[in-house]
Amino acid sequence: MIEDSSHTTGLLARAGQGDQQSLQELFGQHRERLKRMVRLRLSRRLQGRIDDSDVLQESLLEISRKLKDYVQNPEVPFFLWLRQMTGHKLAELHRRHLGTQMRDADREVSIYCGALPEANSVSLAVHLLGQLTSPSQAAIKAEMRLRLQEALDNLDPLDREVIALRHFEQLSGDETAAVLGLSKTGASSRYVRAINRLRKSLSQFPEFADLKK
Image (cartoon, rainbow, N blue to C red):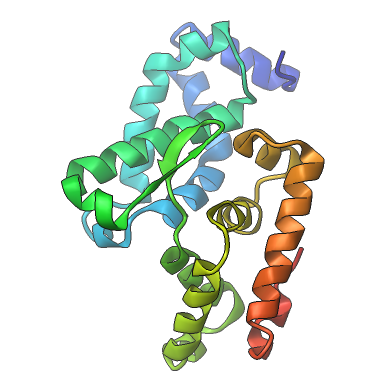
């Protein structure tokens, strides 16, 4: 059984019975976290055609249709279910707009909660540079971005994913473990090893000394 606050439990019960105001409140509580996931995983080839708000709006329609089933059988925490539903909608939009191009450039990563668009090295590099450098610095350090992408490409796909989940989506240790189907200790150890490997690959760049565990 999933543990939620009494307020959230009440909102879920009412939303499951079709109360749209309760659904909007529930969704609003997690909107920013879901936006982080979408921004990280939205194909860069679709930027300018769809944005995170488009994805969230379409996701909310699907969530509204399936919420009653979730409330009756909540197998994962509510936020992870929202993330799963939003990720599935994002994957659907990728397929709708990109078609067969998906096979070459936009992969999906199969994890415990289903197949979501992969957080690839290009997207991770862009977000990491945005966190660690000013826009003016990033503009003149294209070579650093290429080195960063190369370092990320050299990581195991699961290592890139655990960095994406913890460092960019800011999931907790428990949430990361649940998403990846690992124990909390296993997920934590994997994250520490992945960050250390990335730090080692980027040790010649002092800008990346701020990478945190």
